[in-house]
Length: 202
Image 1 (cartoon, one colour):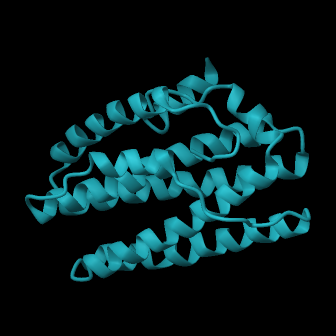
Image 2 (cartoon, helix red, strand yellow; image 1 turned 90 degrees about the vertical axis):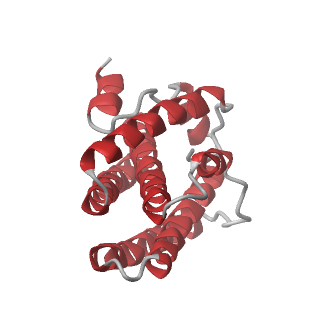
Image 3 (spheres, helix red, strand yellow; image 1 turned 180 degrees about the vertical axis):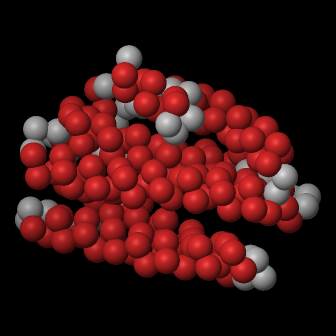
């Protein structure tokens, strides 16, 4: 109950991760670390893309520039952990979760609406990542990895908040909150329909 309430109250997520996921992840450490590394890499490149697309929005550029550095630093940390354990990075895999989120984005219409959905997509990915990292920090038997993921959890929580704040900087707050509710409802459906896999962060 406490974990479910954390997911809903702190992050807004409507559906917590299936408890079986962390057990599956623990027996697939090479795969989960590889997927995590690529998630951090994609987070950095997504921020770069937003800066390139909306370079005229000063606050967005100023706030996201250090996030690019931080996310790339996270990629390097996970990569070092992979090598330390004698694992291989391997190939990037298709991220069905993120692809389904992108499919929900508004593609046409006003730039404001497209920006809103791009920021809320990023916020949602960070929120779900934070929730998954919390699960790993509490459920893994490896003490070192529990602490490793605790640090990532704290970082993702800050990023989630930042993307919401950026959305409210450029778009009317009530509109942001209304659309965020739609995103949360949609994400819950996506999570409920995805197969529980221990080789994916999402």
